[in-house]
Length: 391
Image (cartoon, rainbow, N blue to C red; front, side, top):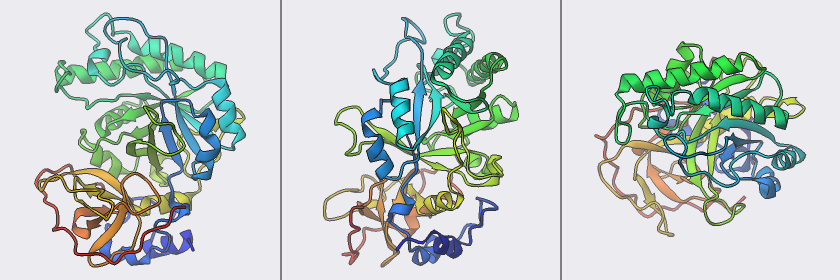
């Protein structure tokens, strides 16, 4: 039987704060009666495709909020040419289906936002991107009935430094991002909505310091600048813990979902509970249950790359002995012989095993630094761990 109250008591968690003193994972694993149960499934997902047909299955899987996209028409040339799903943009039909299922929605705008070159303030073709994006956003929000005082997140889907295809010097990258959000705020100042940011820890921190955003959605890329620092500050609202997962309620092909965990701490600026911008056309939606949010965080952990060892099905085969913390997992079993059963796809069954030295958790502990110097523990002996039944 799942018991959130017992889990919280075992962890020493309270509603007062998220960043609790770090304790050894092995010391708390045995006090988790809710590991691998329905109560700690993630309650927020996002995807770039229409979910109209899937809302009842999402609800049955424990989802309460769906992250969906705003976008604008695509042109040609710099800043206009990039992949986008044909059903990327939230529609009235889809929104009605989400609401009819008793779910809420949170919105994010993205238009070729994965390349810093599309934000270059020194290029006339991209220098006015913020105004164009914000203008398109408010039209969509008005048409769909997004209520006043709810946020719209804007994506910065790249590490905010000069690297690879990003040919702009780092200081110009930041000037471009800052200019983009100044333009968004300029447009939003004449509207009823608030500005949010989806991006790296550094992007979130600087925009928070400059008061250019009030809601913060931390991306899943643990190697990006200041990811751990901003996560550990407790000032984020959403953390995208897994990306590109395919579930049985989506068709085969390019319909992948991302899963997210919600910050229940008052450090996120929500004294009345975990609110991160979710809404329906009737108004801002109710905050998620604070105990649920703590339970979900407590049963997830940071995992070293390639350190999950395969089970009988052959999954989670180690790929390397030089590893980095670049992933998260859902902890499915208590510790046995130094190993935990885990899922790395937010599933309801054990997909492999990880040694306690290769994991930091639950997610209420501090996110570790991105570190290439670590190595995996030796493969486990034959484990007498019962499989978790599908929920």
